[in-house]
Length: 490
Ligand SMILES: NC(=O)C1=CN([C@@H]2O[C@H](COP(=O)(O)OP(=O)(O)OC[C@H]3O[C@@H](n4cnc5c(N)ncnc54)[C@H](O)[C@@H]3O)[C@@H](O)[C@H]2O)[C@@H](O)CC1
Ligand SMILES: Nc1ncnc2c1ncn2[C@@H]1O[C@H](COP(=O)(O)OP(=O)(O)O)[C@@H](O)[C@H]1O
Image 1 (cartoon, rainbow, N blue to C red):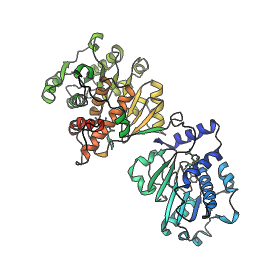
Image 2 (image 1 turned 180 degrees about the vertical axis):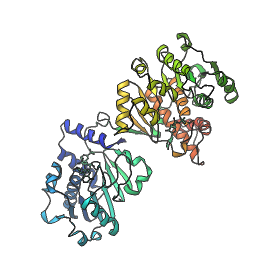
Image 3 (image 1 turned 90 degrees about the vertical axis):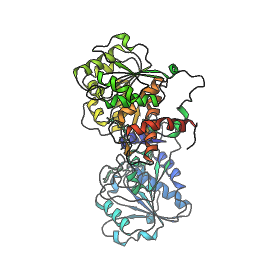
Image 4 (image 1 turned 90 degrees about the horizontal axis):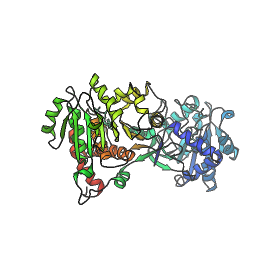
């Protein structure tokens, strides 16, 4: 299953059109996919907007008419300004089935004459609140209609990217969404407007990835990719991780990252940290190996590691800058960069350009903006893809349904919940991803799997808790992994 934003979906349509498809043909395929979901109704009012959502409405209506259904098309706006496909399908409709709605006749329409209203007013092309007659039509239906409303692609008035309703939106009973889920549907509050969401893909060449759509990653991915531990495994085969984390000022983050790495299955974790943290570490997690962080790293300080993590409570003092620069220039194994190290990196972006190894960056949105030196983005998913592609790195952009992308393949992760908005949660995730990287998972796989496991462990805790404390989440990790691998039952 794939996910798109308004711009990504436009990109997908453009990709198909550039690869030999005609827009009328796509609309025909869209109505083929829609048809089954409407055949149980008999009398249809199809609301038609000016774009291809309206074209889908006409094309669907023509097919319903062929099945003997009663169909009336209600349209409005400037008829001279409709899309090419909209005109093409409109021309095939019988004149006496087309009703132009204006202020004079809106109150004469009895919507309850129909057992189904099909919403083909606006789809992903809507870019502001419906105005004028469109708004009046929506209000008239919402105030008077008692039957079933089925939306094509997106209920009119719902923002495709945010899932927020504009002033004037239809509340559908069900939405048949085409090609990909819309980013806005990830926000559960959108359900009030979409009703049940049914995804239908069109019968076209599989080009979701080429066109840049995001894959939605759930339990199936984790089950397929998570590996069983082997019968005669020895700790070294599960990796030696070096965590360059913590400072005398920030002592909690390194403890959480270290514990999370162990609980995710790391063989050995060496926590290269400040003096204060070296003394706290064994009390919190006796398995950990504290290493006092040198003022200046030498090349051989990085020998023998399978994965490195830098960040998590490192601070922003001069020696933290020194440490990040040393790690970026003198170490060679796969690297995870989190928290303060991202802020330091944002002032030294040239360091990222020179990396000849896998680098995973795990910013939250604030850190990402700092890395990009921008205040806002028209489309976060596209911004994430471009960043990863420009810097040849893997980007884990944290938030609800965290984004993971290497610029070529892009994902949104299904697990995680609002109870996880607690300090220390990012440090926990960084430890999990580093652990998987050290265990030999491919870097992109480690990032996706790490985010899924983190969110899933959080979901397990949230089943019986109002907040998810990182400590509790970490302790849930081994159980969650055993569940996913099928070694224990729910
Ligand atoms: N790959 C796919 O998923 C396909 C999608 N199709 C359909 O095409 C739709 C997208 O078509 P379009 O890009 O033409 O977009 P829409 O049909 O959503 O509407 C775009 C039109 O609405 C106007 N508009 C936008 N906001 C407005 C506002 N607030 N008030 C008044 N007018 C406004 C625009 O100027 C444009 O004319 C999809 O939602 C889907 O239903 C199919 O037709 C083809 C294949
Ligand atoms: N509302 C939410 N829904 C889902 N996941 C969330 C939510 N809030 C936070 N998270 C997750 O918690 C983690 C928070 O990371 P971060 O902001 O770096 O925390 P910190 O800096 O405090 O360690 C991320 O993995 C994020 O995806």
